[in-house]
Image (cartoon, rainbow over all chains, first blue to last red):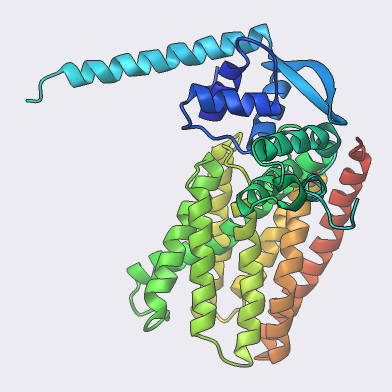
Length: 106
Length: 310
């Protein structure tokens, strides 16, 4: 499987505990990344469209809030798998890099 | 409620840039997200606020990606995206092939005519960057965009520095013709071609046809200009595209023929030796025919696709 982009990985991570709506995802991604990943709204929906098309995210429920529809998104089992695979890939990379650092320079 | 648009209306107006079906699917939700993001701790902002420039650029980028067939786009947008990609690849090849050939030829035979003064480094850089851009487009490298931007600035620089009337008009029209493929290269997302070797084989053919053949005019008394050779090359691609009903390739050939026509017509009108004029008029006729036939094929294919609906 192709590796996920950083925003995509964080969107999947934001949905891992519960379904969230657009702003809920943005706020959770900002919290998870300690403010490092600030998703713009256009970027968020571009990412959500792709993840939905790939079957990693699906619509959950709709709520009406201040006269506007608020759609919630949830992680699919495939999405959970993709997030686990991405975490394993990054772990393997980190291990390789740390092992290199442990080697004394000649 | 006053006549002054509220922040919500301003966001909705901005989101009208998105094409269907994405607009119907996302606009309500995106508006809600924007308002929640901006008004959470500033209720005043809902009355007087406006989407900032970064938001606008972000939405325009999403709109462009959707119009060129990104995830969530309509079938027509996918066709448009494939066509723009072909415009970038064919157009960059058409200018890079003769430029690269000329560089090599001048390196081998130093007495060949060529650019002088400040033009020499510009022409050399353009040739090198052109070949690099073609490779990046074929192999889906993210370097394609900065390269296309650099080439665009270089072309603009050459026109501004060498500006003079009436040659300036031809230069400006030529800039239009070379700018279109570069703008296409800026617009498309990096994507590796399905069979890169085919593009390199095509590039070898273009170097021989568009690069090599016109130089024969220097040794044998035949008027074959780069324009004529490029028109013939474009027509060959067009014939294959129409025969195979390859709509993106046919559309790209038609678009490139249309942008190549104005400077070609103008240089022909300026006049020259009879044989030269025959070659130029031939090129004009070939390009016009290619534009009509390939354009019709592409339009027919686009019409067969369902219109984007909500």
